[in-house]
Image: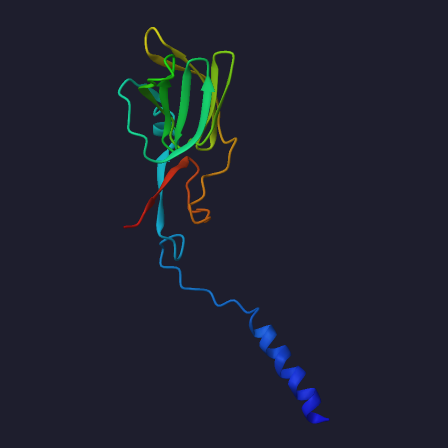
Length: 170
């Protein structure tokens, strides 16, 4: 009778032990075990970074693609959007780059472009003649901070800190 009670008791102890969490010592680096570090900007600096660059960039880490009229917008994850002139589909031309830190998506209604800018929602227009970008509206803190590629959130931020990207530790 003792062995029939002893085996379930030991199994129960083993199961309970698997629920105990042993915390690692926090060395100040976050997140523990992550191979990425957040790229953080102060809000005042962050809000001045969205611009239209006339020099095209190479597409390295592409995300979503959006087509509007003769233009193709290709997201460069967390950096902005490549602007492609597709008026001649047999020879599309990379004509510029819209720098929007922390971006992953955009939408266009009429001539207004809406994009996520890390935690903010931006509305802006592009004047093709003067090759300039005008921000018409910024709604701050609509989106949560960007999580690391490994799925970690970063909580050691000051009130005006914005995570705009994550860099590998290499």
